Length: 84
Image (cartoon, rainbow, N blue to C red; front, side, top):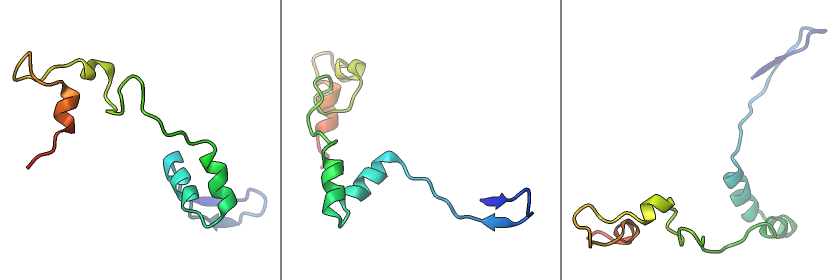
């Protein structure tokens, strides 16, 4: 990014990167500064979602049955299985 002064005509070249919120929180949690880590931890809550129960699926996906059979496993169950 280049910034120019209208009065002096001088230009300055800046290198700027933008960080997302998740990366900023993760970086703060890895900080060597204990005060910074404690401050960020005050705003973090670990709990399982009461709607998706930790699957991160929309409600419609939670109620979908597998395509192979109407009596088959729920989609969330399929996604939690491991492959050999």
